[in-house]
Length: 195
Image (cartoon, rainbow, N blue to C red; front, side):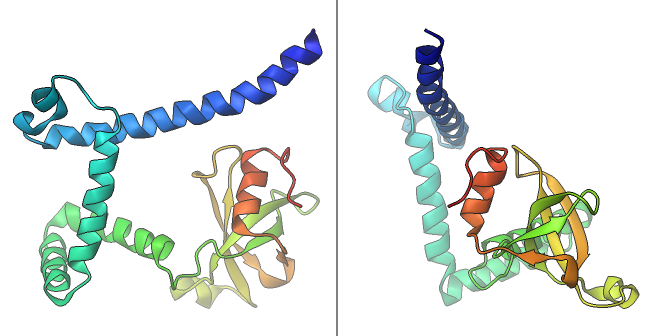
């Protein structure tokens, strides 16, 4: 009986968690309908809510924004808007920081999270998987002797939080593993080992 129960858990728990996460994401995206005038919302038009319409609307808006700003006029409007945002005291620092991080993470030419590595952490006798994010720069580079890499060490099972470290290149072991495989390994707490 115990064996059947565990087998059932192994099948249903991933399905339930996936459904829960998708439900949260779609529910959050459906909140974007609050910005649509009430007379254009599904409840007013059809008499009932349509789950997922906010997700479709959000994806369409993101796509159209990318399409419109990928030309000369759209690019000019974005640059003017960014210049205006940079003149507002609190907004400028917040927007600038978020923009810099998003440009690094989502840029196709960027090197963030392009390579999984093995580093000694939190002490010399234990190891963890990290992701190379670049090399130290600015004044920090002037105070480091030797060649260093900037790495991000994600926490388990939530890789969105973690630690930023600067490690000597000689202590960093490059892994023959994709970033996706390394993330699965981290999120599963080592249960789903890469091939």
